Amino acid sequence: MHAYPTDIEAADALKEKVATIRQAIGKVIVGQDDVVEKLIISILCNGHSLLVGVPGLAKTLLVKTIADVLDLSFKRIQFTPDLMPSDIIGAEILNESRQFQFIKGPVFANIILADEINRTPPKTQAALLEAMQERNVTAAGVVYKLPAPFFVLATQNPIEQEGTYPLPEAQLDRFMFQVTLDYPSFQEEVTIVRNTTGAQVPELNKVMAGEDILYFHDLVRRVPVADNVLEYAVGLVQKTRPATGNAPAATQYIAYGAGPRASQYLILGAKCHALMKGKYSPDIEDVRAMAMPVLRHRVLRNYKAEAEGITQESLIKQLL
Image (tube, rainbow, N blue to C red; front, top):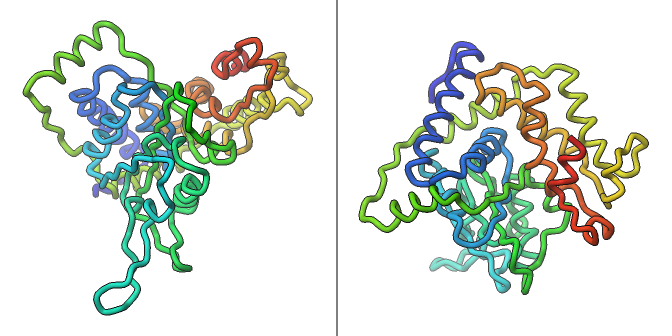
């Protein structure tokens, strides 16, 4: 772990490290630059992310690659309808000396890939969400701390609604970002097929370690923010709430707006986005860059919006 004499030098180092991380990930993941950027921001802001995309877009590979480059321990949990909370957090067993012993589950890692989180019943989803919120788990009345840093990157497929348990709004709110993955362009797909059907496996260098990430968490929080930028972020979130007086035309399509957590994540994300762009303080453009991933899963459409086929994305664009 390298301690920097000043925050300015630390900010410059962060920018360089992020560029190196993106370059390393680019050896394995073709395209998806925006998705990679958002995942790096959420990790540097100590937030969790939800990845939404059709099967086969390398969601799992992307998360595993990020864990490799950041030198963090990684566990993948495949969510299924019969998965129990103890399959995630661990369970007490009787050992050979007739004593109860806690065997840790896969949640005890730095990065957890919760694959198809909407395939498992609410009871099991809730077990993971306690870990996300509290950064610890409780088993048989004993609290166990999770390793730091700790991130959950969850995936869900948008198309198969059969046999799924959609995450409730209060649980979606635990995710800093909802990131949508799109199909690759023609040229990107040609490159992907060329890279993945040959014999070569790219070597990945470790760019950061866990203690560097914890250091940068503190650095991001120390970034100063001007009052007008704070007010812009809060104003934007307030615009999503139909009940407030200053509601724009878009709110006729919104059932519920975003809560205060959205304003916090807009500012945190904007701080990190500014550092990655080489600025020492965020401006309104940085907040706008964070609006889509932060608000997408926090703005709930009403029946009118669904009947008219209006998406969350188009509502957020109207608010911006």
